[in-house]
Image (cartoon, rainbow, N blue to C red; front, side):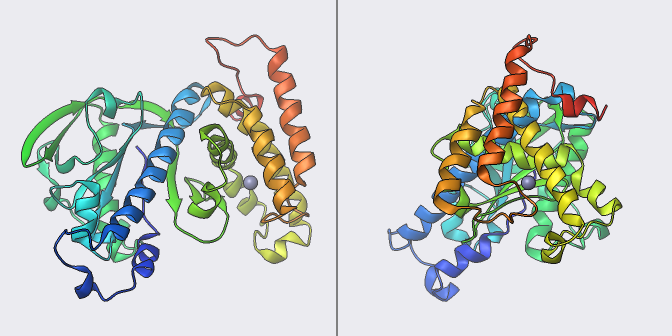
Length: 341
Ligand SMILES: [Zn+2]
């Protein structure tokens, strides 16, 4: 399942910088801007959840490590400055609910939908889930409850059949949900004024500002697939094992070459991941050409990343390799993942 640890609630809070007490009020449209902002972010979350799910599901056969996933995304209203407005914008009866359901996922088959409030996992009320687990101590307090619930759900899913109790408009129902095994990966939109996408080994994160540049889901998938490729190829662990300095100074020395090799591999693998998930791999070419022309080397250092023209050449080379292959069930085995297994 896709974890979603919000880092953007404080930005949402910042953009409505009125005192909390002034924001609590009748739902008379006075907080229409806050509702619009929350719904706008929810739409971005839903796109990212859908694209991430499709990429890890479609490429599952080629991943050495797998996780049981439902395709739903949970959110905790405690992360918002104005919880009443958040609950109303997200359509929740309670505090923890579903904000996204990936198309063609087990969550969709189980008829779960955004706006459902989560009440229990295998009859264990979510209020009784332990949030003082020492393993959650690195989470900021406001994220601990959602992290604990995501972990409880992940644990239950690993044992296969799960019953979720949800409520909508005050009516409870319990639904069985059977997860599917997919590649590892978590996906999150990070509200930020910088244009960036990152991979930390598990989590793929795309900034809200960068996502404004995607003309369609194929372009969005190109960036998610590049970051997911870093995680599937375990680049962070490998670079750490080689004591590569990933900081600013790392861009100057010997580390730059090792980072650049990782970037080349992520570009190469990304178009295979996209094609297998039914996204147009040419979107990687279109996105980086347009972005490159507008921003030059932009957010990427010239010493660690190829400039956009070289990156486009890499995409074209990989697509030429695919064109010579005979797909099996519409899929191409990515050479870089074969090497991992
Ligand atoms: Zn990269």
